[in-house]
Length: 371
Ligand code: PHB
Image (tube, rainbow, N blue to C red; front, side):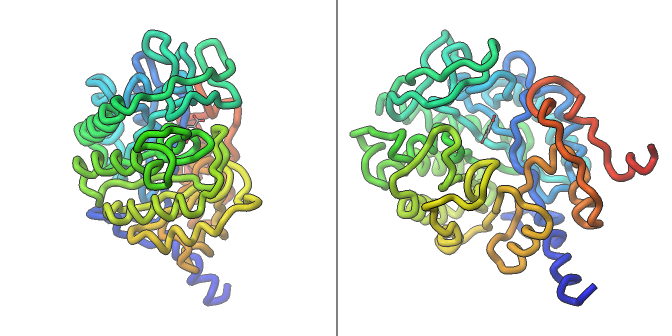
């Protein structure tokens, strides 16, 4: 082994300071919808073991979690808006902390990516503008086409921001180490950012500053609870996931990131390219310009393997690397990356919904050796 590759090998496994937290390594478990919550949007008991098994990640970002019943867009996703949910999350954060790990919660409102059957009183999903998304919602009756959402009134937006603040407080009560604001993947905050989905004529639509306003108000509300040093944001500037697009994403996201940086957020989590797809989007821009506008840590995500991750860290294109699918099937991903062991492949049939199978039964290297 050359000296250079020996050096390259250490980057992922170096400790890193994230606000007040010392992370054991630069490997992050990305937020992953696993659709195993119970009635009333309460996280499953199995989630305690699932997250604890993955506590050797430098940081776990728990799955997207709705801030309100209206924020829900899929069956079996968890919430953080009532007592039973807080108590269930508390058992999860305790189990992760007992293993020496750190865990953030991802705060989620799906906006138009929902369906009346998932909404309180079968109401229409809400959105910046009444524009129907292509595609289908995952409901109790399986996949059904999306509907035309109801445009939120200006007078409703302060209440929405307040729901984010309360969800942030609830996450604190549940013992999380911090929170991530979900502003990616075509959900509500992303719908406000982009001009394909935001055609408002009030102070929350039109100019870049106006379209960024809701996200920045949410960032202010959430940092008022946690301080910037325990708040991150996830964005996906080049993704079309959720039937989203913008006519000119580079100046939009430069503005967003500059403003988030001014609020001293601890990290910027960027999905590079299409969510779960290609990293190279035709007509895209170099996302490193966002790193240059942001003073905190840069967390990169999308299709990373060990080599790509080490190279990104070595060339300082990222400070942290978030792995999604590899963490589904490799609870000991950190050890496997370190030792160069084979990775288990995730089974697509058990990614969403169901119980223990494909959730808490992927073996560690040690367990494989005992078989
Ligand atoms: C999903 O449930 O499929 C999902 C949730 C959140 C995301 C992306 C996908 O950011």
